[in-house]
Image (cartoon, rainbow, N blue to C red; front, side, top):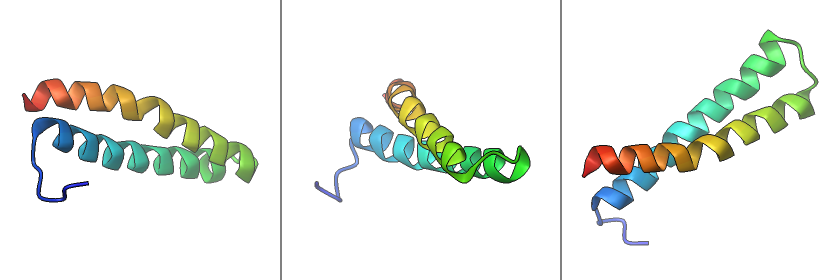
Length: 66
C-alpha cells in the first residue's frame, strides 16, 4: 500500500474503514452495556455492523470525494 497516495478511492477506503470501525465499536458497547446482551452476541452485532457498513460507506465516500 502506498501511504502517500491520496486518490479519491484511497481516501474513501481509509475513511470508510475508520468510520465503520468506530460505528462497530459503538454498536458493540451499546449492545453489551446498554441493552445487557451477552458479550459474544454483542461482539457479533458490532462486527456485523462494521462489515455491512464498510462497503456502503466506501461507495458513498467515493462519490463524495470525486
